[in-house]
Image (cartoon, rainbow over all chains, first blue to last red):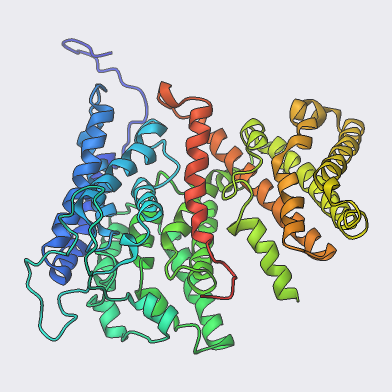
Length: 344
Length: 194
């Protein structure tokens, strides 16, 4: 409907637009994740950049492969770049680069392309990539390379992990130096990591999850830019704090950590800010968003403190992704003028 | 005691979900997961059959099978088939619409491997009658849960423009795999810690 030499401009509604476009949101989220990437690089050294780079290369490559014949060129909206970046930040620093690359390929392929592309997927692509890696290489995905400040001396910025450059599918029996994450220490050995470390981020763990304060900073930026629905993070964090507080102060203070520890450790903040708020895979209605958030919070605490794994944020979000079509259906608003039960 | 029962229930419901972790009962899982309403009702019918079959199996295991252990499989199958027949007549009378909606999948509950699996697991784990019923309710609930989640997703996926290669059963299988991935998070839940 492009008119040549328009004297009268014809246009359909909407006429007032907020200027919120997919590339803008993606750019905002990428910007918000950059401090976390910087912290990961400072904390773990150059491996952080290599792992994130490999995951991003896998994601973008797969996106190009599956959408190269489409005229609208979805590669340019930055969503695949963001998926790769977020996936990379959820991986352990010592992971072989080819696995990170494979995670990106699977994340985009299985998590997005087969659903028909951006906006149609029901699971968070980055988390699908990570869940796939966790199922396929459980040991690698739970071996945490210590950060640079772990030993007596600060390790060099350019050091690599023993397996970083391992060849694909080759098994090399090397002694890998590992350090437990604060959550693992709490769950299996009963020692609490100092709150100062977990807030600033000088602990072991996945690349992007260690520095609580920088993730919150990114979250506040996204909040200011209104890139996500504030109800989801509020509901998740509120639920976790209340649930853990009840367990800690009401039941067994030695078995359950304080709410502040729960809040600042593991992937909780990272998952809350960057994964659970994904507008595509979370419910659209305000009421649905609250139910979704509460569900994630409850599942996180259940898996962390009653399950076999030290951390469950990824699974909690994926499980609630699974349930979000149902949530959206149940809280559908009543059609005006119809009876109370006629909506479904 | 109640802790043991809770563990059996949660284990059958989530951790060792019959569909998503044992991969039993896949035919109705793919066949009837097109709409949420029918999914809920088939789930309820299957749960009912499971509970009755579990009770009958406990009875047989206690009183008949010690004398004729070779009759185990055939007697279990007989019990399941007759329960299904009963449910079928019941649904046909109460809700003809549901009867038509479930179609072939209602009599097919007879051959639902999840139910035979349930009674066999229950026997091999030496559950008491009460434990067996709890196990059956958990397994049936887990089956229903998987069916409803799947139906919700499939109703949604119907609206998106899936690529031609995966449309239909292929997509259902892929979705099932992804739900199964998510359910891996329940590993070890309520098992008392490691």
